[in-house]
Image 1 (cartoon, one colour):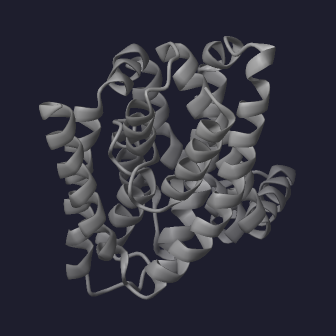
Image 2 (image 1 turned 180 degrees about the vertical axis):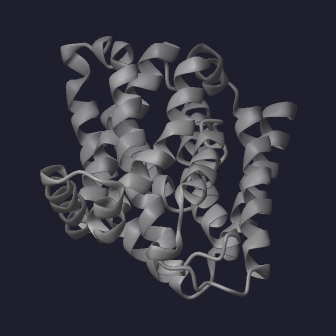
Length: 274
């Protein structure tokens, strides 16, 4: 992989990880369009390294929420009880993030090899992008957005977590599916976006931990493209988060449906007929 290919993939990852257009789908498609020569383990390892870059961007934008959750958990640990968790906004948000992580963790670990094999197919990514576009389009019909953190329960977090689990398929947007699931349940728009991004943290960390094999196959000669890819992913991710927060608050999430449909159709036609 050349330096310029790594930088391009870093930009693609950073933008599409948080914009609701599927980072995994775009990486699969872009890698095949560029003709990147690497094993599936190496490509997955590079993808996860880019995910680390986007993890840095989440921390940079939501450090106050992260600090609030950590402080809340520490307060509750002094006198642990369900009531203490419920009454502490930071601890309760952390609890909902933990619950929301469970579905993706169970499915990702249980079907790890199956999902890894899907990263070789641009056609699957294209088809899943069509589904992502449909999910985003349907959010325009949700009119109520009044549920705040105190009104949520564990079932709400698990439902959004199941949407995140579906995003293991390349082409299903993690941010798009989780924000949409929250909006369908009448969550406050800002809370839906914040929760989606915070939910990405354990998902990204878990993915990196369970796919270290791919990262270990990168040679020392490949470290420069890897580092530059991570750096560009972090910068692009930071800008994408800021942009998407504004789009969600204005109720414009469904605008991304047109892009997903267009890229999905192009991918299916191109890779089916070339």
